Image (cartoon, rainbow, N blue to C red; front, side, top):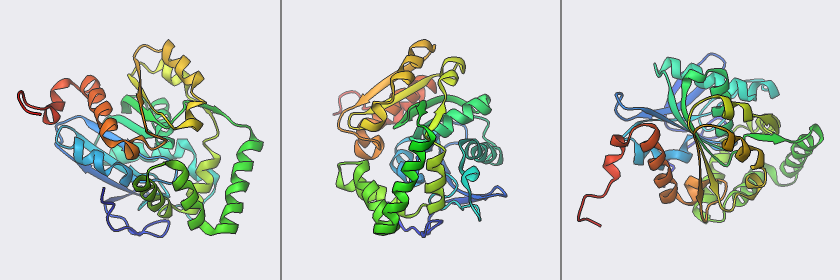
Length: 297
């Protein structure tokens, strides 16, 4: 995967379109036939829209594909001065709603990784007409860390930065995010492009939340993709899976060999799962460009 030239909010310059929302400027890419259903791919903490470059290439022939870098990530700007409230899930979901309004997009099929999945849940909760279906990976719908635990994580990251620098923190996190060298490098590059305040304050806001009622009450299809080696998330999925059992339309797909960043670790398997999912929630006619003609291998 070619990540291209970068330098942006965290020190890199990104490629992509920009839209000024007033409080921040968001980086995004929108491609594909305007008549097709819109599918939105949204990254997690410290990543950016480059995470889904391969998915844009794969799906834009069948769908209208939206990728976006959340505020303070990639080429999207960071509020100055920045504080914890600037990186709440509610604020980030509001950014997306404004972006959709500016792009004249009424609703999307959402695919979110980690914090990107949480922003999808939040958008579905706040403006349910915006989200037609919700697929997540590396995301649990409920997490109940106490104030002390959240504070300890922040202190630990600050300590690592003091000892090893911001580059050192990104390198450690990249290696922890995947066992595959190419994916590790991609993760590190994205983290280096994130604004340190975004990494710090967003982290504080994703340790204590619950979207279980959204799952049981929203009435939209939900997909949960589990990476085999995403142990930190998988051990916190019990309440999410219980909510899936109570909801009307849910699916769980397991991807062997993948960690937290399933689409980077196992892109072919990830694309196959999402293609099947889109075929069901968007209509099967839209996936024909990736079907193998009869008689061909």
